[in-house]
Image 1 (spheres, rainbow, N blue to C red):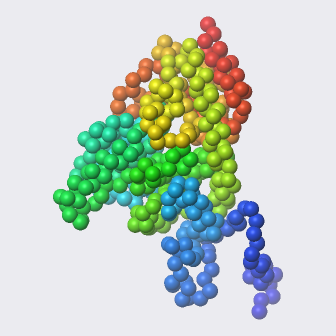
Image 2 (image 1 turned 135 degrees about the vertical axis):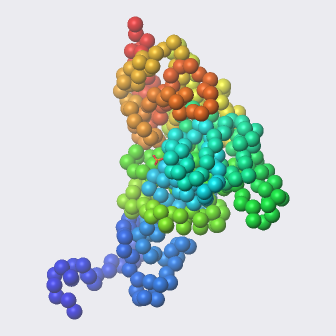
Image 3 (image 1 turned 180 degrees about the vertical axis):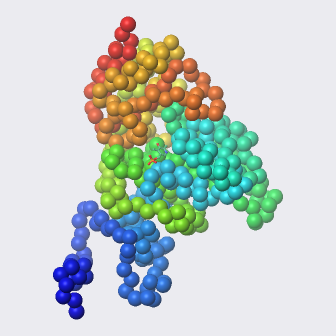
Length: 403
Ligand SMILES: *Cc1c(COP(=O)(O)O)cnc(C)c1O
């Protein structure tokens, strides 16, 4: 029919044979997806992954990654979004309506609180903060209009490991009371865990009883510090459908090339998790022996908040530990220590190949009182040799302590 070269190149008749089989799943990229006829265009279904309708609704590459992340989390359904923070916001947008209340742990990932204080507040949704280490405090903060409770294990930066089953029990008891009072129409309070730290490896979120498990795939599943992505996994088909519909209406797609990077990271996630766990524990234990240090925060260290719960509920720990320096050491010296480190680079995020550190002003990011006086530095261990990292810490500490 056509003779123009350009038209021939665009509408080329060759189709590679089906059945190509190799280690890496193919990378499919699309906005447009073709339909064979108008009937298909009108009726093809994407929500149950039986077909393809538009790039935003999924490709073979994103469907494959969704299924693998659901397996990693021990869940049944997964929605992918362009960052971990977008996954937090997706859960909030899917389930919160004007007049609802949200409960967030005071030690939660900071941007989770920032989204609540800006967007959710503007949309007429109130946020309250609870002490994740005190289930009675969660019980006291629940009201008739609470709709969603965020959980995080352990807390960001300060790494307190909460009793997630006890917190979930508080919510379930409130739901039973509500169902008794409000009958069938009563809306249940939902629980969502930020499981970026556990990554589906340290413990299984659904064994702890939560309704949804969210992860920044940016961290362990990628492992490369070169891609941003997030996921929300559920076992409940109704919750999944609600997430999927909000996801579609908000227009959150993930690119095939980005999905490919996470698919490449997944085969080594367990090996990396345990290797980085061992290095972090060795360095955290060594830092405890240093005279400059008031406390090392890491759930696997006896004396760290929530250590006993971590022993009961978890099998491993992530690459993070925080050091609280003695109160007499001025912030300027702590900043100088961070600047003096050579292998530990300054930067956000974690679970990549390069070790990172950053100083935090904890009282400035907490509503509740913080028991320590000294400055805090959070370390995120990469894949370097433990002896090299320890030598780096030692040389920077000696600079910090020099007269
Ligand atoms: C990094 C992180 C996020 C957000 O992930 P991004 O992909 O950077 O948006 C959410 N929660 C926790 C606990 C994180 O560490």
